[in-house]
Length: 403
Length: 229
Image (cartoon, rainbow over all chains, first blue to last red):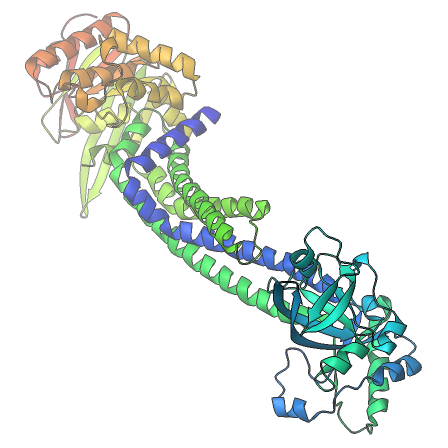
């Protein structure tokens, strides 16, 4: 049986290579199908990984209280008409909430950072000393600012790893001064290296100032949000409680709608899953379509191959091949074409994902290439079945007479 | 017991509503190591009879016993096995695989007989040697002359050591010199103990055989011993 298998494999190789152009053209559909399915898989697995790490940076147990809802289609004027978040909410929430473990106001704007002759534009954040509890990043070097520093408006700053690297290189930045929009700040801490958020922007390029100094120097007005940390196992209760606390602060009547929004990373997840389904669905659709078209192509060429070799089939039967052996020979040929096409497809996907990886995290999962190979094999078997069966059932006498 | 025994064999085709009796009640026994020529005009049924004997075709009715076994009740794989191990076909048009070398062509029956590669090479070389083509084993059919191709075909028919060689107009596509060579090889095989069954038009070719039967309209009209075998 193995002997015959090897022999059939040799026959198919020679048949495939004898008609190179034809084989490649035939295989094109499968090549496109397999490379698109592997690419989609690659992209999705890349997305998954970067989403996971980005989400862990946001924190699942944090409630983000602000004027606007994430991914909502609310009209902008409605959002604009909502009352602003105020710094005094921090104390009020702490007073009334039993679940809030940490409450941090966060204001944010773009600013220019410089040290000696180096300059960069980045996002600066103004917040209080509880901020560290609401992010998953740790301080790698130095310390965070204290409540007193916040209250007194001290000009101290905690910088991201990227900024530290850019400004100070190997030197210790602690105690050194940087300028934020021309104001001098003393560096007291450096955050751990984080990487990019959703592959879009680097969170390592940030600077965090005490709320007091931020408000005084950069902005009295502007948008503010509150980050509220609740116990991870009490997420629902926390959400309900903070909602009612906020309604109380705002003095809303029971029949009035919320004039604020409480966001969770869940919103990201929902949005992300929609995106993932969209990409995956498109991928599956394209793949199925091209695999079907490719499979029909293979079937067609197999019919041609059987027709061309009718006489050979007759001879083989006359010298002792059973119908099953003939069927095996032609099935093997279809599978061989498809496996070739599959390998080329995977190779293409690998090359393309290598280039995509320069802009967006993407890696070809090993399991996916195996699955893609199995898939091409399946296409080969399915599309080879009818032509091979026809070959097997050919009448040897008529086949021998066939010109 | 006869090697091949045909009793009241009929092969009836239905062509356009009309009944065509390709074989019309054939009774024929062939003993081991016979040298038989089947003659007759075209359409007389000699090719059908040949295919029947070679287990490529099955009769509409009648009894065919091969080495005492009823052929009609055999399934596809049993028939294939008989064709593979007991019968060697030699065709008028050689029917070699064009892309395979002489050596590989001769090896194919051995592949279907599930014989190991090393043994296959040895057996195929021996068969090629017996038809005097050792030096041509790595040539493809299109690099060989007609006579040489037919000799490769004979080597292929022999390689599995089948007892019966079925040759359908083996010299039909050859010049007379190559034809002679081929007939000499068949004579030689007969002397070595093989059973030879020839289908031919030519009296000269039939003269090599020891027994000649003539077919006409699917019936045996003449059955003569030429020389005792």
